[in-house]
Image 1 (tube, rainbow, N blue to C red):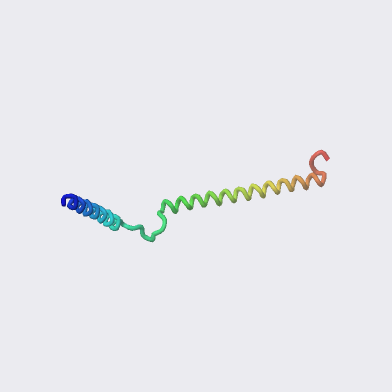
Image 2: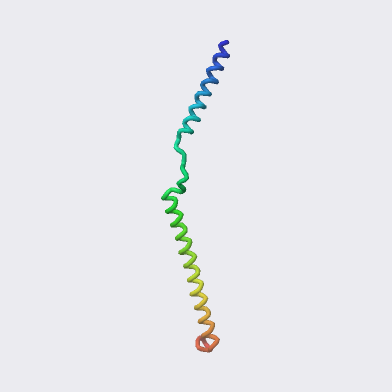
Length: 84
């Protein structure tokens, strides 16, 4: 009979512990549908700005390089530059 009593108290103790955990989790404030935090939004905006600036820089650099090469090729073909 003593073993049954111990088992009953153990089961009741686990049940009380589990019920307490469930109640604690249920009582926590839930995250609303507010979206991202302001710091996360700021970090994403900064990262996006860096990507845009990098792309623009690469495009402009490529355009300048191509224009310079075209100008050099045109001058060489016309006999205006180089050794002739």
